[in-house]
Image 1: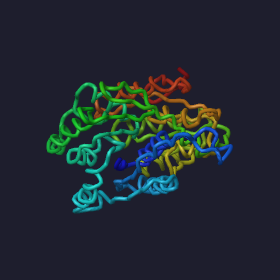
Image 2: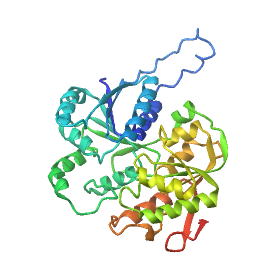
Image 3: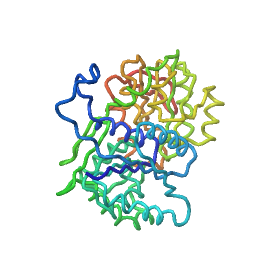
Image 4: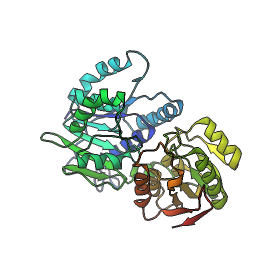
Amino acid sequence: MTGQLAFVESPVQLLNVLEWAHTRAPAPTPGTEASATVAPTTEAPAPAPLTVVVLSPTDPMSRGQLRRMAQLARDEGLTVHWQEARGGRGALVRTLRRLAGPLRSAERVIIGDPFSRYVQLLLTLFGPRHLTVVDDGTATMEFAAQLGRGERLVRWHRKGSLGPRELVLAPVTTLARRRLAPARGRTVEVFTSLPVEAPEGVEVTENSYAWTRARFGPPLLTGGADLVGTSLVETGVVDADHYARVVGELARTHGATRYFAHRREGAEKLHRIAVETGLQVVRPELPLELVARRGPVGRTIVSFPSTVVHTLPLALAGTGVRVAVCEIAPEWLRATASPRAQGFLSGVTGTAAHEVDRLTTRGTPGVDRLEFG
């Protein structure tokens, strides 16, 4: 069998490639740990070699986290290539030329973001026989739903109408969508910790964060709570003033001392949060699942609707950490937010794990009280 090729553009994607590889590792033969002289009667087939290609983003926070995740992947025995895919003029052509051979020969291609224009372009040029999609946030839920309905692939926070750039790239997106769907001679797997409804012919494999639990922790627990930030302001979904007020209220209600910033949150916004709330703003060096598992971490983690309300209960299973999600009230949304935003965010909150407490907001404008749902 030829090799397996993974394309990642974010630290979380690389983490979930590691989790996927962990599920494919052969289990130890019973009895071999106790006696090295006992030979197994059958030998498990060795997994195909996995090479990870990092299509490097441009923002410094993502690049830093990816560098550290790449070293973790190398420590686990994976081959990692760093590709400056967005490094100025000619970067796209150089990347395609370098990846053409490995793509043609790869038995399986693993991607983390089916909405990525870069990945879509690669899929239009080289259609893999076996395709695996790993989580890169809650967009996995939207991808599975759009694939099942036969719709074009559009991120949930984007407005419905096509802009000039989207019109130019529409043929690429259309062909990529076909390559992301199962067909004769092509299998599609979604490796996820999220509640997705599998489209016909798509295999869904559960990501239980077994590698994270085996590799790190359990963490030392501190008193109080930690808050998890979100980039909903940066993506134009949530009003910045509403967001700052809610963060302050959450900090006071739960006795929070730290605010774990999303890697896309802007410096000006984070400075405002630190000044107005007194929270210590932390820029995590690794995905939050690993930071929390390694510890120290608060006994309560409060988040807005995001992937972590699904992943943290798995990564922190058995540690005693309580995870809570604060719903997004309609009045927090900006007038320019996508019409689908409220429904999608409510769906993320509503499908959170049973172990997650739900915080509901009462009062407008801003927040007067926070209550457990």
